[in-house]
Length: 248
Image (tube, rainbow, N blue to C red; front, side, top):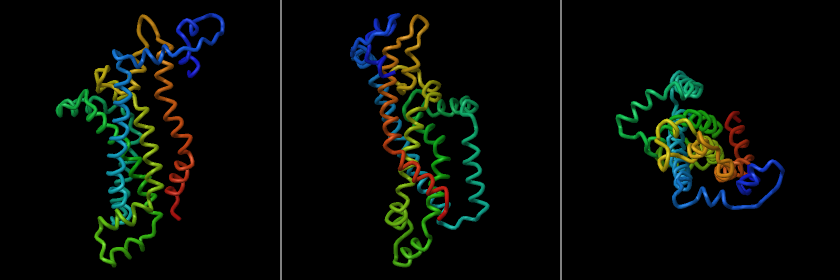
């Protein structure tokens, strides 16, 4: 894909192998009349907003489930429902989601995509962050409470820093999921400047032609950053998920 992205259209379709270095494909996708630059920005905003919302909500929810002495039945019900939502194919929920977003004028907006991605990534985030909070001794919370700290301060100053590695792992996983999401962007936007970059890539497959060079260039722009993030953060992801999965 990287090699095709830096070749001229003539070299790509040539019957013999040749490498004709060219930046024409990147010039095409980032032309002022093209929408790919806007779509990349849309994806970045979508990832940052959905990941931030997911982390904030999941941190409070998982801390409550782990440390605030809910009954075992309540915790089990919440975790079971969260787990079930993960196995429901999103396509089966699209009609209802479309009507809901339509009623709130969120179809075709980044706000609607942010909410959808937050909802569908929240169950995993809550489950994993809850298990990570379980590894933190409850005595720390009790000591801080005895010293006069309120619940919010205990959460912010004591528990949250200790859970930071697990939350970071969940943040990276969520960002990758949101960046790669395609179905919601395809269904809930009209394409063009409203859509994320994953939808823009699919638009390059047209009835009259397939723009292999432009598609490879957009693929490099979208895939390489997230691959590098996964490689660099691999140790953090593994450490956060495995430590949170086993109560020490």
